[in-house]
Image (cartoon, rainbow, N blue to C red):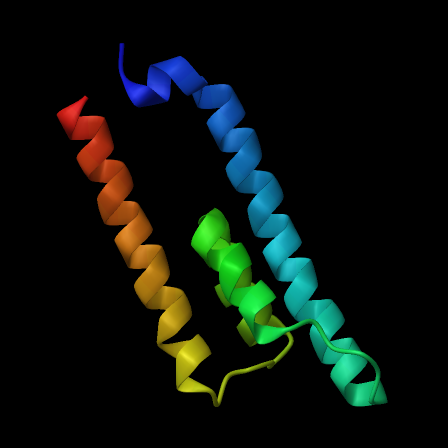
Amino acid sequence: MSVIESIGIGKLLLYLLAINVIAFLAMGIDKWKAKRGAWRIPEQTLLSLVLLGGGIGGIAGMYTFRHKTKKPRFYIGFPAILIMEIVALIYIIIKY
C-alpha cells in the first residue's frame, strides 16, 4: 500500500485545498494589517504555511495582494518550496 493510498487521495486533496486557502488568506490579512500599522503575521508563519503545502495559495496571495513581492525570501522562496514539494510528491507517487 502506497503512502498516498494509506492517507487517502480525498483527504490529501482536502488538506491541500485548506492549507492553500489559509496561506492565501494569511497573505491578504498581513497586507491589510501592514497598511494599518497593526500587529503583523510573522514572516516565519507565512513561510511555514508554504512549507506545509500552501505554495500555490502563498504565491497567489503574494501577487494578488502585492505583498512581499520585493523580498527574495518570498519571491524566490515560495516558488522554490513549491517546486521541491511537487518533485517530492512525484517521487512518492512513482516510488510507491
